[in-house]
Amino acid sequence: MAWLDDIQDASFRGVPFGVEKPQTKGGRRVAPHDYPRRDTPDPEDMGRKGRSYILDAYTLGDAAIADRDRLITALDADGPGTLIHPTFGTLWVQVDDWTVNEDLVTARNICRFQITFLEAAAKPVPRVTKDTSARAGAAADTATGANQTQFAGTFTA
Image (cartoon, rainbow, N blue to C red; front, top):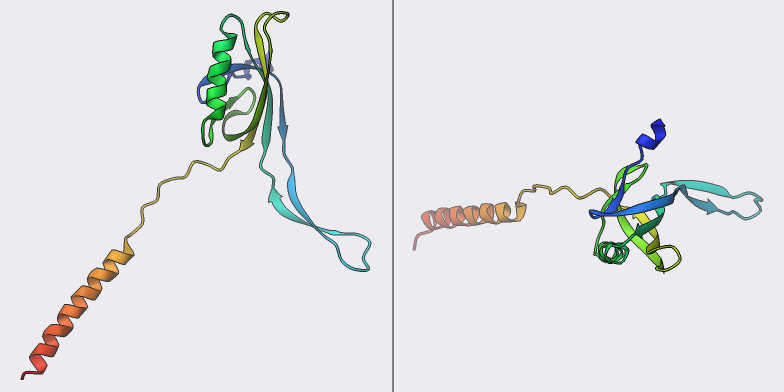
């Protein structure tokens, strides 16, 4: 089964978990414009919506509670992080929300999550910029010194 070979083990911030029924939501950002005496709106395409990834995830077995706690810690951490999605691969995402339901008796230690991740902007790249303020200040000091020297040489008492 070739398609089964492409499915990756899911994790968020390095914490692994199982996944059932992953969903992805996308679309376009549209601003409808309505005009007087016109029966149809004029929809303006504002670009692609950010994607959301909704995962029915789980931790299972004797370590279900410890794994649940590790996953909750990763989900509650500040800022975006790396999600390894079963079919989309490595994604940079922000956690939107999550819920967890625990069935510790009838389903033999399983913690079921529903997690919504939002697509996040790429990691910012550090930029090198010139300190133009310091350069302008140094140039002004040089000009001031030159002007004082010229003034003193021209006007003597």
